[in-house]
Length: 239
Image 1: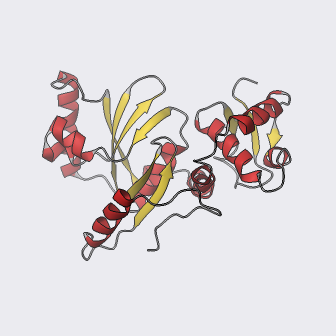
Image 2: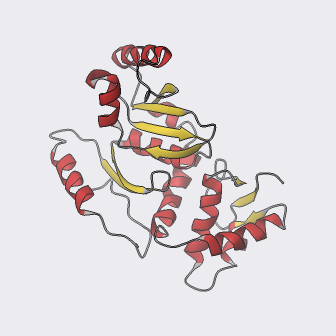
């Protein structure tokens, strides 16, 4: 399957039976459709996720790299249908819990259509009237063009997320503390400075600890502007 993401090396987890069954069912259920299925590990969902089509996978990369998002649920459609009804709930692709404590239902589409716009208007009405206590704070629609408006960000995080999946079973506190000490004692560091902290064979764990800091907004970087590499720059959010 051409769309499956795999760790860069030494994967630490196996595809669970339940998700493996879902992957098989969803793959068979595509019929004649040509969209790809993407399998990846989400730090913000703390779970393996299965994403239908490139726009949803690119949206996943956007969310995982967004420090304003605390947690994400990419398997929210059934719950949304229970809350808002089948017709409206089925257009919801993700539920995001934000750093400001708001909750967002995100609808991802290849392009905006009048049909989706009408359904979103109805969702806005339900949210405004608070007809159900579990409705989100707001509903957002993102198109493929909006999601990929910064291709450098998408390309970089496509390369970076496997580090986090690889390190999912490791307690990263020790590595994170060393990274934090390095960054807090300098105005700015390069990726090569972080890698230099590691004993041979543990470089990826320091990279994962660094990326966790970027994900939660502890560190800032030039990953939205420059290709990922040993020269990538990082600094504290309050330098």
